[in-house]
Length: 154
Image (cartoon, rainbow, N blue to C red; front, side):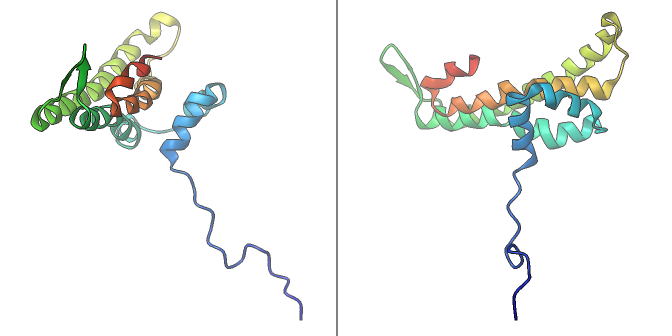
């Protein structure tokens, strides 16, 4: 009796990558193919905000919170470590302003779209604002080590 079952029967399915990670990689590495895909999606601004902007905008503030408390900031041989409360407060303000910035930028993009020959579309404006911030949000990870935080401007 021969076993004619496919080789993958009984094996667990291969793990799927996190959709946020896949989207970030695609925007950063293959933007020419990813932006048309984003344009074709029928997602609402609320969905983009909840599932993409909220988690990604937290990368920088959380990394800076951990880095500043763990390593502190060094200037001319003097190291300063903020208090935990101060670092948390700074992270919360930074996070809130990052999210507010995306929302305001989307409103500006939507308002100015007719000046550039485009049609007003709040959902598309929000896509541009949120997905356009991807590189900056991802670069926030450099905040884990304050002496490397300057790399986030690259």
